[in-house]
Length: 238
Image 1 (cartoon, one colour):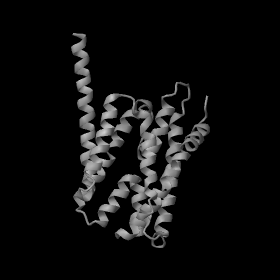
Image 2 (cartoon, rainbow, N blue to C red):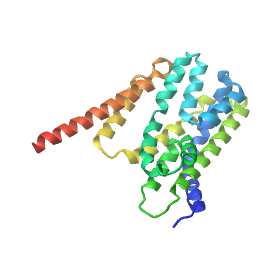
Image 3 (tube, rainbow, N blue to C red):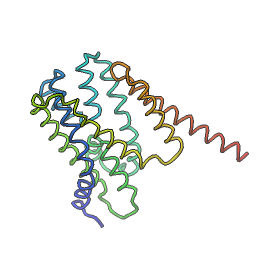
Image 4 (cartoon, rainbow, N blue to C red):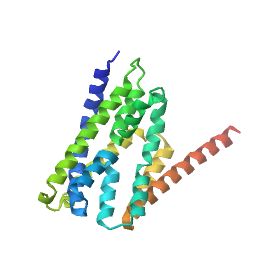
């Protein structure tokens, strides 16, 4: 059986490849936060307490564009709603843990940690410390993110046109890599393709509202496809 230490180290080790994808994203976030008008303290507080890379990046862009506060809150809320699905998926494996465990694990639940943790939880072995695996992954991601955001803030005024470097492409590539293993049925394929297509078509919408539209259209397309498939199966059986 695995020990707490073994699970913790394995979670951190298996998350390492994903840490590389966060490095340019965090660096650019810090650089853009400085130029958007946020103070160093506010930018680091966002990293420390929000700890949501995509939401932080979007929020900084909206702050720079002088978007209304309501738009910033709504957009970041929609972007982060996926974490509710992550939590619901992990709940069967974590529901027996006390709140003192579930609260910090919920705070540290990122896309990267979910991607590696769910595979560990689904392995059929007798380890009683799989939550330590998730904790190891979360802590590795958290410290990595704080480091690169801080360096981005410190070096922000020394990085000329950071947004034009193209380094932020690392995060979408990382997301795609994490997403592919979960695309296992037709409704999911339809959801992904629809959301991707709509996001491109709505790229010009102000305040990045296209993200919200694409998310809802993808969910709707996947839901309709799933319900249609169930209806066809029922008709065939009849």
